[in-house]
Amino acid sequence: MPPVALWRTGLLLSFLCSCACLEKECVLGIVGRPVSLPCVYPQLLTSVNVSIEWRRGEEVVLKSVWKKDGDVEEWSINRATTPADAALTGNVSLQLPTVDPTEHNTYYYSLLFISGENHSTELCTVCLRTAAGFSSPLLQREEAQQGDEASFMCHSTGGFPEPAVYWLINNTEEPPEGSVRTLAALLPDSHLYNITSYLTANISKDASVSCIVENLTMNETLTSTKYGLKGSPVVGRASAALWLLSTALCVVVGAMVLAGVIYQIHLDRMSNRKKNEYLEQHPNRGYKRRCPDNEEEVEEMKPEGKETDV
Image (cartoon, rainbow, N blue to C red):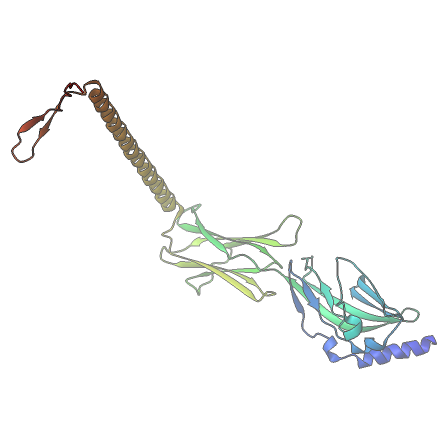
C-alpha cells in the first residue's frame, strides 16, 4: 500500500475513534496502587501488522504489535500492560501495576496507532494525576518560649503532593500575620511529604486552636483541634509521674502481700510436719481435747494392745 494511502487510513481511523477514548478529566492514581488509563478502540479488531504505543510525553511506556497470524508481541517498562483480550475487544487501556510519586503530579499519556513505515496517529490522550493521603494531623502544645505566648506544633506525614496548611483560632479567627511557620520535607528515596507547621501567638487560655491540612488533589481536608490550654506539657508530666508512683506502690504492696501468704503457708507446713513427727515418736500418748461448751479438757487415751495366748 502506498504511503499516502496509509496516511489516509490513519486519518480515517483517527476520525472513527470513539469519543470515549478521550478523557476530559484526569484519572486519579493513588501512590502505591494500580491504575488503569482507559482507551477503547474497536476498529483495531480488523487491523493486522500494526502496532500501538503508549507514551508519557516522549517516553515510550508500552508497545504492542499485532501480526497476521494473530500473535501479539508486547514490550513495556515498569511492567505496564494492556488487557490480554485487547485484540478481541479493542480495549487497549494502559494498566500500570503501581503509581509512583514523581516531581510533578500530573502527566499526559497518549496512545499512538502506527502502521506502514512509521506513520502514526494519536488515538487517545489520558491525563493521570497522582496523589497520596496524609496522616491525621498530630496537634501538640509546646512550652511557651517567652511571655504569655502559646506555641503549637502540627505534624502530618506520608502525603503527596505538598498540601496547604491553615490555622484557626476559635474556629473562625485566623492567627496574626507572621505567627505561622510551615516546613515541608521529602521522605528519603521518595516524593512523599512530611509537613510540620508551628503557631506562636498570644492566645487566651479558653480559646480553641485548629490545624487544617488540605490536599486538593485528593479532595482531602484533615483537621485537628485543641480546646483551651489545660492540657499543657507541665500538667501532663505531673500526671504521668503521679501515675507511675501509684503503679509502683501497688506493685510493692502486692509483692509484700504475696510474700506474707507464702511465708504463712510455710509456717503451717512446718507446724504440721513437727506434729506428725511427734505422734510417730510417741504412738501411745494421748491428746487433750477442749470442749467448746464447758471449756473442760477431756483426756482421751489410746487403748494399749493386750497380749493373748493366741
